[in-house]
Image: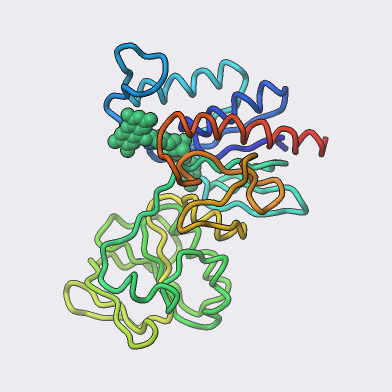
Length: 284
Ligand SMILES: Cc1cc2nc3c(=O)[nH]c(=O)nc-3n(C[C@H](O)[C@H](O)[C@H](O)COP(=O)(O)OP(=O)(O)OC[C@H]3O[C@@H](n4cnc5c(N)ncnc54)[C@H](O)[C@@H]3O)c2cc1C
């Protein structure tokens, strides 16, 4: 059981971890996939670097600084977060970590496949959250578009309810899983008022009742949906203390929208770290 678990090792997550750890609490940071910071070739507008610094250098030294302080930093993809009797279970492929408070510092990356019909059928058969919407597909045929661990986890969630679950990789490499996988490139989604078929580039079609999008890693918006967090478009809604509407869950950095810059992520991370620590300490 950790006092604070932070998802994300970019400027928001690492800043949060420094403040939580300095409150003398047990702190775990889980991260996987690229941080936006790693993509920045040179940063020249952040305080204190006369000649600028590469995003990769800043990212690496952030992690080293947290580890030096005693924060546990583990590279693992988080596929699900759930509430277990007032505590939180953070699920990776091979382990569930339990925490009193959770900080979402996942950045804001929602990968939408470039497939005709996705936008048109959103809410009419196209979903971004298996836990939220699986129940609507009891005994029906659904597909999950994606090829990573998140897609397999969503397929697993749906398999308890739906009659048939197929993973569509849309031309990408097949994941290792127990589900039927179709790796043909997808051309478009078809239907009238709701989705009825997936059509592939070779003009073959399959009948479907629901399409679940799960490309890449689960992001801020996916976690928000499963945890019942309020959002503004795809940004998690927080107050000045970085509290979400759900007790014990905090969000910071690009995940909350607004100015998508390092300085804002570092500030919000610090505030989230302080608020989450105060909350966790009350539960000790
Ligand atoms: C090309 C480019 C150049 C930029 N240049 C500048 C600049 O010059 N100055 C500036 O101030 N800002 C710049 N930015 C913006 C800046 O990089 C971001 O604002 C900042 O990185 C956001 O920090 P964050 O911690 O909120 O998110 P991120 O840095 O994106 O970190 C997100 C973290 O969440 C983790 N994560 C996400 N999902 C999961 C999951 N399911 N399981 C486990 N871990 C997960 C990722 O691995 C990552 O560690 C630039 C961005 C880009 C793309």
